[in-house]
Length: 222
Image (cartoon, rainbow, N blue to C red; front, side):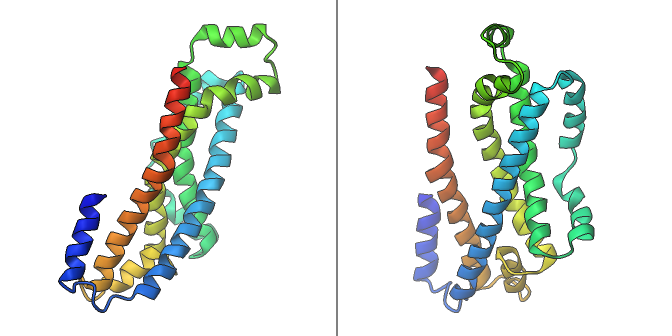
């Protein structure tokens, strides 16, 4: 982060950002951040729900290879399907990004359930954790750390998915801003946009996910 800030200060001192379209960049970042947040919330709900339901299902061992195959598909290979059904719209961008983010969350939950010691599962059964109680009192707490870990991986993919879909759709947002700014080559707006998205992504990871992961690791160690 220090390197990015120093580099930004040096570039500003040499007037590299003179002529950059700051209002347009700010609006583009707001649109992208909005789509990303909505996509993550959808992905979190889908990934956690499906993961817990599959973990609760007696068909867990049979379904696990199916999800492994599905998760190995490159996310951008599915982009044409989202464009076909939803067009070049906000809905397409959000749902496409949600599908990319949900996969790591789902994978992390399934791995946590699969790798859980058998004695924990047996203890949960002995103490009456059956049916939906098993999801609430055993599988959900067991998957808490996995959800955070999967979220960190999914979010890294999610930024790429949102911005990539915006570039393809050529709509509002950071992806469209970079595409427009780069038409005439590397200029002040494209450099400013690159540094802005780097700072935004780093700030989210540092201020939100790093403390949550540290807290989760400390709690799990206890």
